[in-house]
Image (cartoon, rainbow, N blue to C red; front, side, top):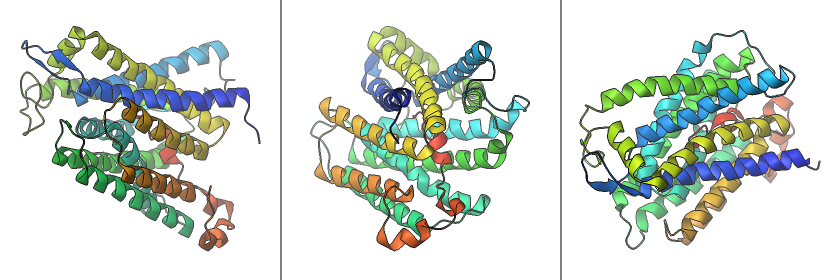
Length: 369
């Protein structure tokens, strides 16, 4: 079935804004600016960037309110239950807070392309947790896809560990640590997906509204944590700010004020995550979660190409193999490619053919990332 003009627009918006979100976050990490102590240093404020991401999610709630007021409940983005307790979304917001913060720390240590590729590991953990908490059955086709995803991620990780660009400011250990942190973040994000499916999906809350409320809770709690982190000494190699603490939000804000390009990068993160969430939810509604996951793979390719073009990293051919195997695994998992040994399972009931699509429904609210 051919896509309509509106569906093509949504797909393009999803790829473009999702790519901009990750690239803007990495761009900010690579910029230098004068801090609150007068010294010029690299911008490394992952928790402040996470707060910016939650601001972008709050924009989704404002968008929902605007659409609801203009179009009432007739619009597809506003259809759903309005009589719910917002605090049911608090646990999901806390998972989002922890996962996003760890991902942004990992992003400061590794490549933007590796960051995006390793985010694909979330389907592994969502599948595992779904078996335990949602009584799901993983089909052989899905096991085959998961195996390919694991192999692809191993290739990417080993490549980061073995190869290093000339002049790369981060050491090999930093790259490995960053990759591992991103994987840990996917475990936490998978907990968020499973919680939302178990306790939130049955409430029929409009997705755009749910994302917005999670942004409100996440930003509120993180704002308090920023005050605490201002006084907590950072472990070695993680306190690159004026006070050497876990997070010096004042130093970060001063740096943003002293570098217009840094301000542009942060604003790009905020605006792009809002449009990305809107596009992602719309693609899921207009087409499918599988389509969204495929488009997310295209976004990974775009981020990788831009990173190479900007010379943020060098080209290593094993990365290409790892990326190809990762995409193949995602396609098999979602039933886009039917392996000969899996066809019998692909012909079973509709329930058995369902993918664990929750990961695609909100995997980049991300900060996406």
